[in-house]
Amino acid sequence: MVLLNGRAVSEFIDAIPLPAAVIGEDERILATNQAFDLLLGSGFVGRHYITALRQPSLIDAIEHVLANGGAMNATFLTRSNGADATYELHVAQAGSTVLITLADRTDAENAGRMRTDFIANVSHELRTPLTALIGFIETLRGAAREDPAARDRFLGIMEQEAGRMTRLVDELMTLSRLEENERRRPTDQVALSDVLRVVSQALLPIAQAADVDLTIDVPDLPVTVFGDAAQLQQVFTNLIENAIKYGAQGNKVVVTVAPHRLIKRLRAQGTTIMVQDFGDGIASHHITRLTERFYRVDSHRSRQVGGTGLGLAIVKHIVNRHRGRLAVTSELGAGTIVTVTLPKG
Ligand SMILES: Nc1ncnc2c1ncn2[C@@H]1O[C@H](COP(=O)(O)OP(=O)(O)OP(=O)(O)O)[C@@H](O)[C@H]1O
Ligand SMILES: [Mg+2]
Image (spheres, rainbow, N blue to C red):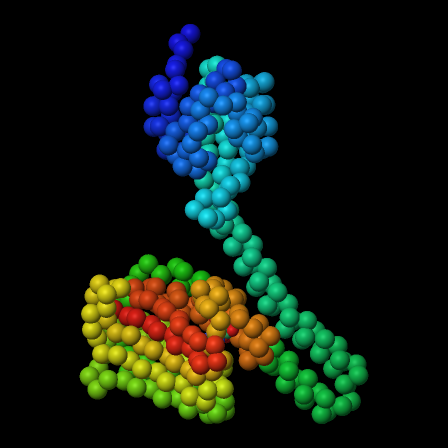
């Protein structure tokens, strides 16, 4: 039998593109590779595996393979770069030694969790209006049958709830379409003043109803970008609608388009469009999460104004597709500024 010394084994497993370690016949760690040291720390070589690798799942698997040969998988949980990480551990007999490799499954795990969270959120969002609808149908069949005033009021609420469900389904469909074409950058030349004119006309009645003065300030020269006009309308509709809905206290929303100039972050010429309100503002710990699907700062308030928590997720996708940037700055009590940066068309 060829006996390998620790150094030779170490050179050998350094070629494996996964964290790997070898345990010798004496149950001591014979060698680890660099990826293993980075993940679990160095200094394991020469120690008994039980004292070195304290995780029970790991120790059980090694014990089993040492006793019975063959191979075994187990899940190994650790922290990597300050975040929880999930690894799939593979322990296999290799001659008289045991080879341990760890494959990072964190991304797959997170994607799986996101999918379940997403389904749970959608179901929850649909269930609330459905429960209301079913309740009102029962009432209309029973107690409110002969009461025209109550019937009208209930039908009004039912219409509103059905509207909320329609909006939710529409927004979900928009999101899934966006995911499909996010990699294809739009190629049409779009003038931002045209986009904002359409949006402001549509939102003026909402602004007036909320007692908000909506001002849109565009430069004299046309500012054009490579864009999808309908999608850009959607971006500014969502942002200005948010500013009106959540910033109404300030009674003023200002949209400003800057002329094209060199934008360092884009390393290209581009424009910035700012949507500013003077309302309550958003606490800083919420800001990084605003573009997550269904994330709402105050879900009660958002639902009251008919929000689904998908508006900014849609904005983010569209801005990405346009190779732009989205930034939110806010001060509690003073208001919020959302800035969209778009490269020149
Ligand atoms: N200008 C703003 N001022 C204060 N809070 C805001 C502002 N814009 C967004 N928010 C907060 O961010 C949350 C997420 O916004 P988003 O547009 O994604 O969802 P929504 O408005 O609740 O629903 P939807 O846009 O789908 O109707 C909102 O619920 C609100 O709490
Ligand atoms: Mg919104």
